[in-house]
Image (cartoon, rainbow, N blue to C red; front, side, top):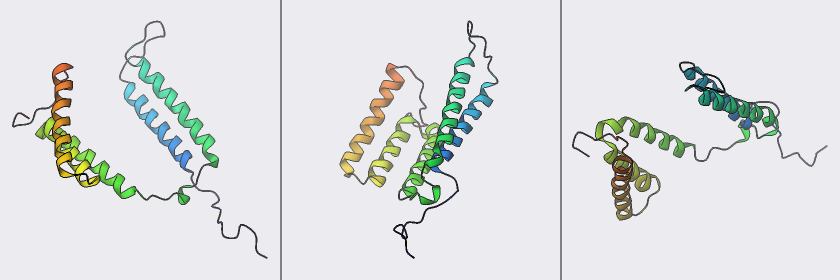
Length: 160
């Protein structure tokens, strides 16, 4: 006897995408709470430097708990396709590389190289547009952040 849903395979059990997301939110909240223990919380009338981070972390943990509990009907992880997984991994590795390059070659060169990689290699835009946007953004953002807002940014060994 064949049923109408014979071609549809329903995956029973297993972790659901929203449940994993909720657990990740709870884990982030717990990390913040762990690092926040070094700061005095104070009281409601006289809050210390750890008060707001603790409040935000507890709120995040509560939201994560709601997402995890309510996520019982979300899509199973086994059913999710990951067509952009390679691209996401490349972007994550580029962000890690930029983090290490920032202090070594400075803000402007790191930002320019980062944008050349993203716009030129990942997005495959026209080379002239890539060079103009990369140079313009790295110089303009350094001026706004470093000069106007007076936020110290790393300057590389060549003064860039």
